[in-house]
Length: 129
Image (cartoon, rainbow, N blue to C red; front, side):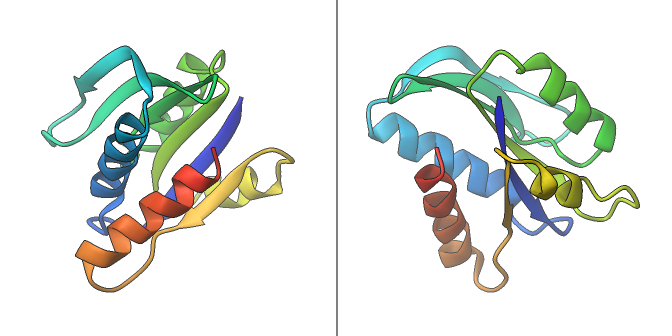
């Protein structure tokens, strides 16, 4: 499994960006393998699996707790890609660990206007699949 980690500050739009990735993949013909399931207290947080260009792509947007990031990595280990939100407020720098691995990618959440930055980040993530 390759991980695409979207790293950003609390309330920076990570969940919105991963929802935009989902919408983009579906619009490009991705097939839903595991439907979106809402996670935690934020109605927008979700997990799911789609098949895109022959690859199983898992998405997990609830990265506010490090244990959930670890859980997602284990749960979706059999997928080709895991797109994972990560709140960079933690002492343990998961982004640094992921960046040091050969097949994993860290996308740092873009600052600025959420309307444009979320879509920009979503486009970057989709290009890495």
